Length: 93
Image (cartoon, rainbow, N blue to C red; front, side):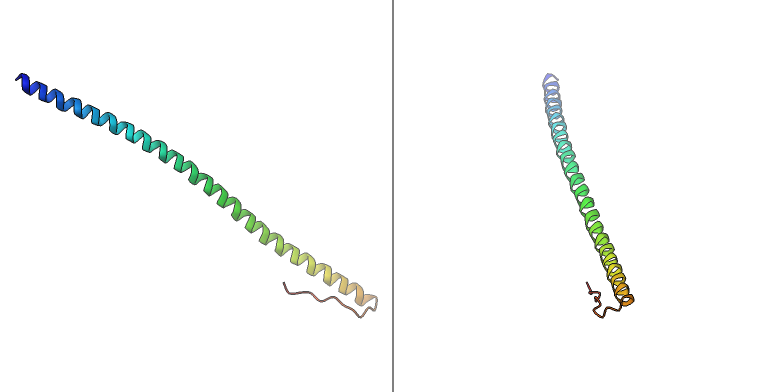
């Protein structure tokens, strides 16, 4: 009986140590995951910022093209009104 109790005690001691180690491993894995989630969050933020700038640059380029065409058209109309023969051409960009 005494040997069976010692055997059971040894089993539960080993099991307890295994569970404690598993808890430590789980905590370490959680910490690593938290760090990785934070890194992914930073990448996501940078990606969104980059997308915004790309969109913004495209929008600004489009607005710049429209403004340039308007200036050229206005200059052409001015030259026509004043009898000038040299007219600007609107470049295709």
